[in-house]
Image (cartoon, rainbow, N blue to C red; front, side, top):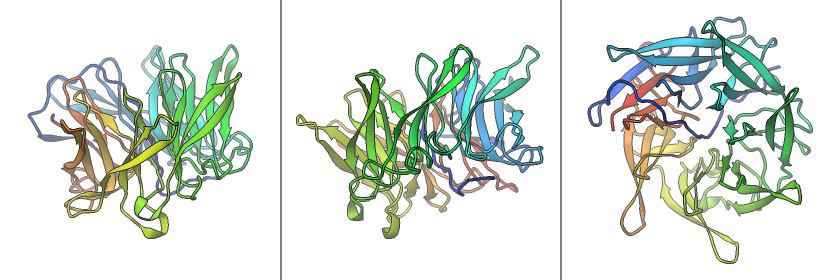
Length: 402
């Protein structure tokens, strides 16, 4: 049985590798690929580069298999400046899973990993074969309780090859958990790092972030002290994992419902977004959390969305550029109502300001849901959108010059 919601939300860590042949002119845009119903439609993942400058992503639907349950694709830069689109794998449903969701990651050997929402969900691995084709293995299948179900987030990988993620439901209390899938001598094993109970968070939608010490940070879209979501930290204590709620969102004008993951800067501050505020229907905001000397975290709203021409409902993770500016996407808003790429920049006084970097017009993409941006080594920005595209509507991969 398919358990899938119309809007699957995610977050992001990226690989910056070899650039395509040349950088675009400053600020110019290029439609790299417009997706069609077959093979593959509606990308709802990050885009990730390999060492040769090829770009990978996934689609939540379509494909030529009977289940129409998604694909993993590759875009390869061509000598003439174009890109070649190739479907690497088409999910088959009951046989191997489907509906890939969220962030893709590579391990050190070039294997590609992601989460999928077919049934209770699972984690897949794609490995390139000697002949060039790609083989898929479902390395873990969720069962609901107590190990989790409905992993709407993608993967985060550590230096040892362990994969981390969240499930929107399941776990010991049925309202989600944080898990780790680890390689073993005989395959893979799953460990539930934390099952949410409500007051400490509920229904996590996003992926997690790791700090240098291996602590795990993330968000829940609901729960917490006020029921409007929370930011949490997981850490090891005496050989087991423990959770601390760093901040509970209050709702109202303070907003809430963090659907995306968090970004950790070098000074230990946490940045994230609030997707809306439930019944109040506010258009979302950007927040920052700073630790005080007494261990309490203070929240500051850096930007509130919704002004004319601005974006609304930010569902993707932040991605920094080389200068330390933060970029994100919103599902709607902008000049045409199809969503925007926005930029947060810090001035000399330490204040952050938001500007609309790019406004989608449908032909060049629309409604980036859980689609964060990524950069190549030349500073070109790439993003996929869930919908839009001339005579298509099934999504676009777009490149924008620095």
